[in-house]
Amino acid sequence: ELCKDITWSCVGFPERGAKDSTLWIGTEGAHTPCHLDSYGCNMVAQLYGKKMWLLFDPSESNNLSPTRVPYEESSVYSNINFACTCHHFPDIKKARCVILEPGDILYVPNHWWHYVENVTSAISVNTWVPVISDNESRVDESLVKCFITSIVKELDVTDINQILNPNERDLTEFRTKYNIDELSYCVHNVKKVQSENKTKKINVEYLNDFTIPTESLHNIIKKLRKCKIPQEIKVPDNKTLTIKHLINAFCHP
Image (tube, rainbow, N blue to C red; front, side, top):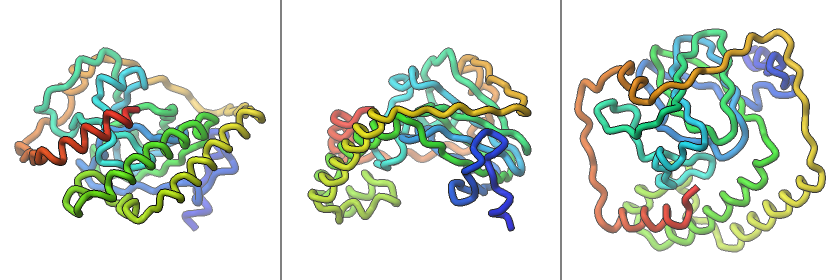
């Protein structure tokens, strides 16, 4: 019954439903590290509780210290830990912060950075809507995957655990031919989409739109909850650091 109730028709996507959506359930303080999604734009609907979104446009990428470690195909992470407010943060003038409440819908444009944290226990649902540039992004991500795969095949389990996200552990079993075939397929799709180049106009008549104002990141951080317990920092060994630097040198977004 719940699946039947999930529809994105109110924001112009009547064809998207439960099978195209992800349900997020978490307790107070649960958070996701700051990252950008490799594909699509993101539509998020808050169902229960409150959730804070800290957003940065793509022009701030270098300030956010992007890294491909831990590696995950669909995400590029930031080295900055926004969960601990005692850390030093870059001087970003145009950050955006919003707290979603039940009934709110947030649109996150393609490749926008975001840190998300539950202000209370919260439930939300989202859908990633494909965009034309996804096909080019898949080529980029396929090249990164080829590079990462060639490296992790030579590492022991301990180093692999430092380099790969848990959902990418099967990467060690991928054959080179599989990666090359995938890359060829992605390149073919780019050429196909470029020849079609179709766009879709979306009409939404009954939503009240609201653009999140920008403010200094330092001002936003002052408003966030303070760290009560100092975090233990685990320092990677020199070998892991060298591998991480190598990956970021070749795969910087």
